[in-house]
Image (cartoon, rainbow, N blue to C red; front, side, top):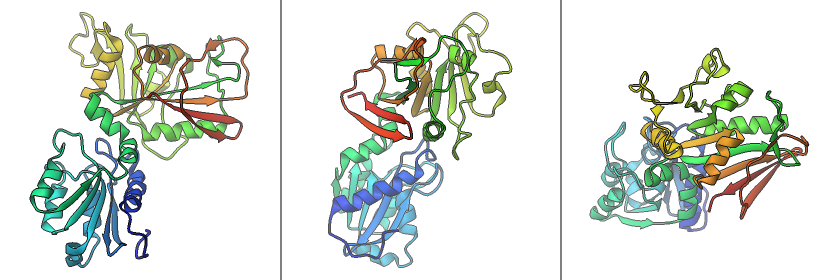
Length: 346
C-alpha cells in the first residue's frame, strides 16, 4: 500500500491509485465491475480497498472498514473509479455508507451505466450536501471497465478476436490437425487472456479439427464459459470439450425436436442472435478464438471491439489465410520470437 506517505495534492494521482487497485480484481468480479477506492486525509492515503469478488465487500466499504478511527472520515476525501452503487444487491448501497460516515468530498472517475445506478448514486450524495466531482481520468476508467460498459450500453458482450498467424500470413495449414504457430510463452499468455474474459467462442469446425479444451490449464485462473457455434449438430462425442469441466453452451439451429431447448437459435441473423443469447446469459465479454471463418464473419459485419494477433516467424507457405483487419492504431508486445499486436476497432 502506498499509504502514510506525503504526496502531491492531485485528484488524478489518487484516481490512478484507484485504477491500480481495481485491476487486482480482473477476471474475478463478474458480473460486477472492477472498482478501487482510496481515502485521503491531508494529502495522505490513509486507507485503500478494491472489489475482490462478486458478493463480497465493495471497494468503498472495504476501504472504510479498514479504518479504526472512523471520525477521521469527516475530514477526508474518498476517491473511487466508478460511481458508488445506490441499490441493494448482494451488499447494501455504498452511497448510504458514505453518507452515514459524513465524508464531505467524493471524487468519481466515471458514472455507472447500470440501470440500477445510472447517476442515482451521484444524485444521492449531492442531496446529502456532499461535494462530488465526476470525470477524473474518465478515459482510463472507461477503458478499465470496457466489458461492463459495453454490456450495459450496447446490450452485448465486449468482443475480442484472437488468432495467430505465420510470417507469410497463414492461420493454419490445409491439413486438418492441431498445429501450433506460437511459442510456449505465447501459449501461456493466451491462457492468461482466457482467465480474464467471461467466455470463449469457436466454430464447430475448429472444435472438430483441433479438439481443444478451451481452459486455463497453463495459467492460474478461472475457466471461461465455452461457446460452440454448431447449427447442424456436428459436435463430436467424447471430445475434450465434453470431457473437461467448464460451463459450456453449444448453440444449435432450431428444429422440430429441439425447439424447447434454450440454446437453440434460428440462425437467420446469426451474429446478433448469438450476441443476444450471450447478453441474456449475462456474459459481459467473449474471446473469439476461431477459426478463420468465424473470426472473419465478425470482421465483415464490423461487430468487434478489439483484436489480439500473435505474429510468428514461422512460415507455412500453403494453408488457410489469416483474417484481415485494417490496423490504424496498435500496441505491440514482444514475446520471445513472437509479437502480440493489440488493435482497437475505433
